[in-house]
Amino acid sequence: MITQTYHPRRCCRRRGPGRGQLVLLAVLGVLVLAVVGVLASRGLPGEDIPVPDYVEKDYLTVNEFSRPGTPLEKINGVVIHYVGNPGTSAQANRNYFESLAQGTDGIYASSHFIVGLEGEVVQCIPLTEIAYASNSRNDDTVAIEVCHPDETGEFSAVTYDRLVELTAWLCTTFHLDPAKDVIRHYDVSGKLCPLYYVENPEAWEAFLQDVEAEMEAQQAAE
Image (tube, rainbow, N blue to C red; front, side, top):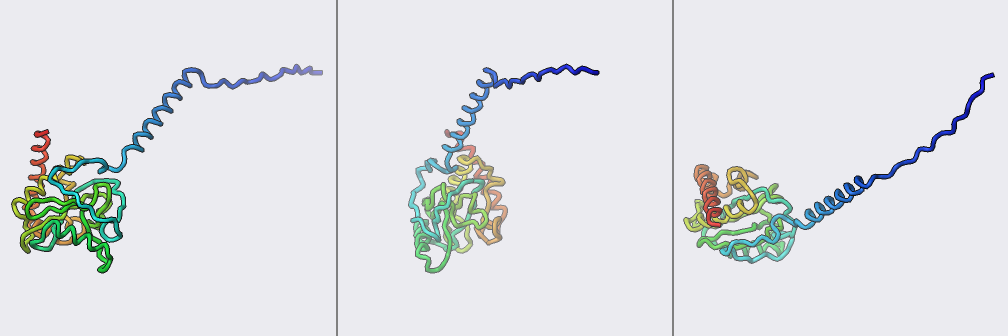
């Protein structure tokens, strides 16, 4: 007869995390909370950014047709437009956008900035909201409408210089590269806007170079 010897099973005790592991977990928890806090406090990219002194804020009222109030959660570029209405001022074009709020014509249109015939700049929409200006690029770009004296769409010298200055400031502020991040409305939708710079691509290239040079000048002046 074979006698079997019974060996009771040893009870396996689960060891909890050691002191070093607890410290590591605590540190990781603090880091996670810190990252979440930073992300939560970042806000929108254009939030709390002071605009240059030459910009006059005259915001449109929030409405369906020209200032929907939709957050602009990314700023990946700047789109240049021309108003298409020769001889009109920045304020007149801003007021036109405001008039769209009535919805009479069912037109959706606006821009963040308008550069006028005398180099004045009116800001119509905060940099935290989208404008109805650039079709599929409304969600990630800042729009600039530019006034012009005649039907050619060419900007006057003072208007041009201010546009270069404003565009350079936007590029520096939002870390954009003029060569690829500053575009024409035409580059988005094929619309002949800004007309002169669609019909004269060499003038557009010169504009981008002037913006880059102005960025360097602004940074050197800081």
